[in-house]
Length: 109
Image (cartoon, rainbow, N blue to C red):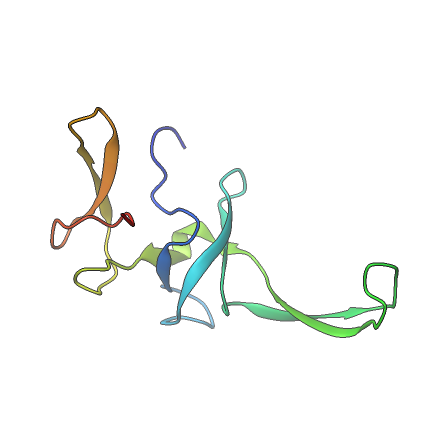
């Protein structure tokens, strides 16, 4: 994935497919090599664990598992709709992600 990433950590995204379709959440982490993304409160799985040094209690732990990157879409902060993103060049030579629907910036200022 050369150039700018379409989805970044801390973006608000909506899930497009799967059992959690329609849910919105913040991106916690991204693995671009495997095209996976971890979204807050989406694809929560239960893991049965034995007690260990790291986890003294053991028992049933719940945590978010990665989902396919193609199954999420960025939500625009201005129009509030899921959108594709484009790039706009800045005066200082940098890039900024913009909403393809309304043209406003998707990046946090």
